[in-house]
Image (tube, rainbow over all chains, first blue to last red; front, top):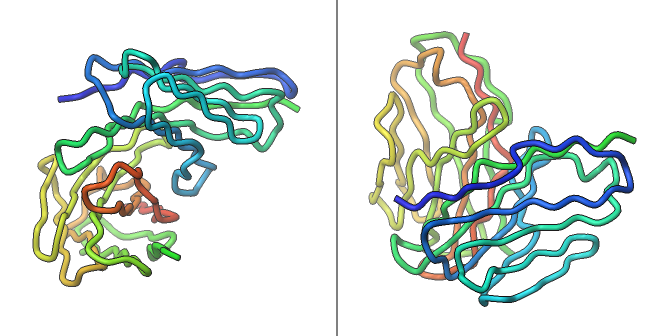
Length: 112
Length: 113
């Protein structure tokens, strides 16, 4: 089955630093999505990418859909304490009832 | 607008007791529905998904079952809980045949003691 390799597994940064995380796959996806999960809550969609090469921003967050359609990255600029949480990438293809394949998550800790 | 409700938020159950977690979606019709489990605050494991009433697909063999008695209702059950069933259970929905991603509920923290 499809698998996503998400890295890094965890990050410990100081407030104000920039963050970068990425996902790679051996399969092609039509859509890449990035979710954030706050402690004790369900994941919330941050950014959705629908075209190869697409670069999309949402406030301090920027994500890109890789040209090969097999990878994506998420950048967070000028991190703040509320950025703490688990970030998941997810790929979606048209087959398999449009099921998402999730990465294992990046646990982000921001020290004030 | 569409909303997803999941309850209860937390649950402590003894080993061997039954389980019933409920999820409902409002504001949409014929959604795809999903149950996930998350252990130790990390990866999301897909347990069941449903593309219609009475249609359940199981992703992993286990002590749990799912049912979809109504279009926008998804239930996760167990006849006898095991310690290993502890975890954070998440319900999600998506628009059928569209690549819009999933919307998750707020989760149920289950502790089996």
